[in-house]
Length: 388
Image 1: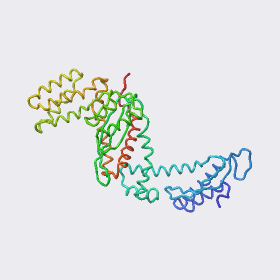
Image 2 (image 1 turned 90 degrees about the vertical axis):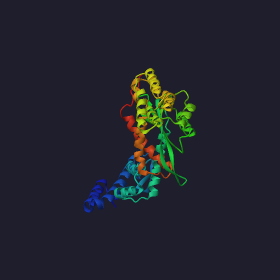
Image 3 (image 1 turned 120 degrees about the horizontal axis):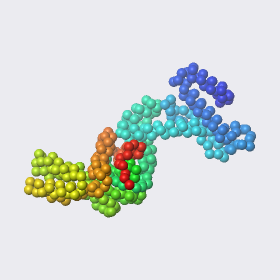
Image 4 (image 1 turned 180 degrees about the horizontal axis):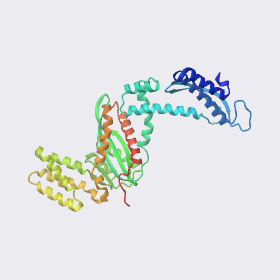
């Protein structure tokens, strides 16, 4: 047996096996034996004594071996994990194997959450890893991500000056019926001017009760210092925001305000005209000038589009809040366009799935993607230069 030979002789014997049988024939046996020998050596070093050796420096006692199977690209390797008494020990060489095994499972899970079909995942794992895996196993492996993703969604929050809020809709099977559920998302700008994903949640609608629970969760996690909420005009969100954060100012996205103005056009040719009229208001460089322009536009359409004029005078002031903040921030805080771009990236990934089997799968995919986005934001360029 190789285990009874001196270490140098063992290595020569292992190399001979590799030479005689080639990589395909010899590598699994070589790797398996090397791992076992490395684990034995580590135990000896940890115990500060060889098996049956008597020494005052001994820190514990050898206690046999425990069989373990490691799945690798070269197939399944049968290794023997050295056991000890009187000391906490696990061989580092096998710990690396465990990490590889975990990494493999997480890679499969990540492929799943990134929209790769289970059929494709099975083919990839069979070709690269020599493993057969079922659709059920793939789904179960995806759940390995849940703990990490849940920690990300529920991490403590600190001070964020600006918070963007929005919702997108995804198709999900609920009790056997395909429904459109809303995915509520919050993005904040911290004190260093970096963006962060603050929260992701799924609900059956954008009703006030869901938005209120969403905002309350932000507050309970420590969100404070918010000076401005930026979002589109959601009735449920508006009521929830006033209930949970009544003192925080609100900026209505002027881009969507211009789009909403088109609903008051008397004919198709008039739509762009009304949208452009709204945009002219927000091209002004001060709040005073914006109000003057608003009155002028409303007056111009008092006869030709009276409903539009009345609606504009009532709703436009909600989009004037940004004038109270640093001018260098105006372009990025007066619209919710940053969220729109993020939503497009989310949909580019979720469309691969088309219909999610349940809300958990939907939340898993979107959270996994947004956690990657969050990491990129924190290590990338500053979103806003925060002034004293």
